Image (tube, rainbow, N blue to C red; front, side, top):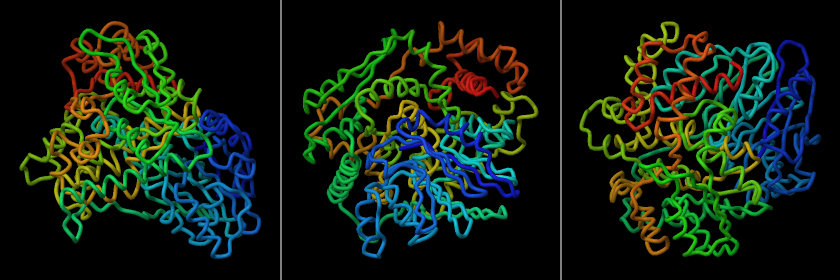
Length: 592
């Protein structure tokens, strides 16, 4: 796991070293172990390394293969690199390092733009062909690893976060109206290629870009998730057994492909508890687990220790428990927001940020349970949209998921940021009316896995862990597991309150108290209840001179929500006041 950056010029100039250095400085937290740069005429790369596989200098980056005429920067982990390495050696390639980085370079030399099809893992990488003078960039299927870019006709700059790009000159930081529509409709999700800033885009998951020296840019999709029933019907037990084995393989891959210890973020929920159980099942002896808790509020506990403690009692891992007082939660909230590559509304971001700080003192790599709810149907709105009989798929989905109707958005935003069309509705309709899904819920889960979670929980975990040089691996988003689960009938996912197959796998392995508990969320009570210091902070942000000068929100709407903040909630119980305040805080912290 690393931070990558680079610039390709199209105007006859060479990249300025100060831009590469500025980007690398903003990526230092992602890769504290080593820094390197490379330049070749119109192209320059910068890299910050977090050493996980092949800890020697041989796998430092940028990696250059003079014989092949290629240079590479890469962020992520390729879990099938040992098999690929053997295959490529049989084709005559010889290797000078022992890690996964060089395997990507050889794969590109062999298969060209089809190389990503051969990679199983999480990745964002760029390959410079010194002979053809072309730049090839790619992003993994699930969008686990980020890749942002700025393309103004004169140059193409890219980096692992927006902060790195903003550290360079010439970035258009005006707000993207259509992206704002996405942000406030889909609880902070802005699907690629947009971001809230007009001058910064992001590569779509499962896509590649090829850039030529004359400025031509070719984008291609190399993978699609098919959510249709298999040709041969499976019994319930066959589905359970197949998912069990695929998940076991996914967990083993993410534990064994590392030259450093791997831990587990143990929340006390089913998903992370099942990861611990599977690690025990495959024979891992030194399991390291990490749990965080916060102060209670009168309405809600601030920790799930009672559940995580039950898992610890069952498996006896090397366990670490951390407690964060409420005053620290609010005090350090701006820190977490400043490390967001894009504004994210999920209040558990601060929890992941503070947990990652502590975990990074013990390990460099952790497994985390993100993706299980989306892949296996764990959220309460899935049965709601599944039961709705409206023949229009968007009308069957939006009432249970969208944070605001189009009309309310135009009430909230000032005139220059309003849109005539329901842009988000059009985008989501296209996602739901796909040829790659059988039933409505198949289409919903497919959209969630390939689009919505990319820019919410997946990005949140990447940003908050990498802020402390910690690599998070997400086995529930393993390519083979996701492809298999997508074929499973929706009823097998929704039964027993959701995630039925996972519960069946967990039964007898995970304590019943964890399996049968109500669905929980990362508890951060200080940020859930809009009152006291938290409310004061949001009021100060939205009424600040900077916010008023920005002219983003309609003052009458702001006053209405401020007057009764706990009455203005989204359909999935998010605070509309927090949404507005979070975006304003993010913009101010990025000096926009």
